[in-house]
Length: 173
Image: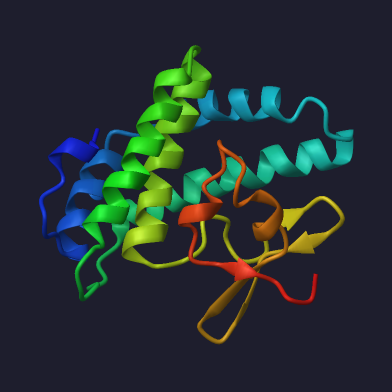
């Protein structure tokens, strides 16, 4: 797994993509199914309809994103902010170390690959456009700007990735 202490002072997006693709190639359908077990447990207090939608949406998103990473043939110009990447990886390492059971470790491993990819290579929000939050609020895009309906409420949550996300608070919420 890519770690903060192995990040060079300079890194291109294409160099990071190569590392992430290698990590994505180690993810198999069983890992995604184990991660969905974790999601099911994590969503246990949601209303049944929202719970089912949440689990299906994230399981599908994990599968699709890992496939997209493995098959990505795009060229991403530019450098990665390695300071921010190191901070991000330290945060993710801490989350991974706290994971105890296999399903949560699988979830953390897959989420790590995907969030590095979308945040530092594609420069997209952690939650894809269209992601619904309680109350029916969604992440949306207007031009090159991504809006999140819950960013301000979650940005200081210790376990949330919001502080690293490229989205901004949706002013309409």
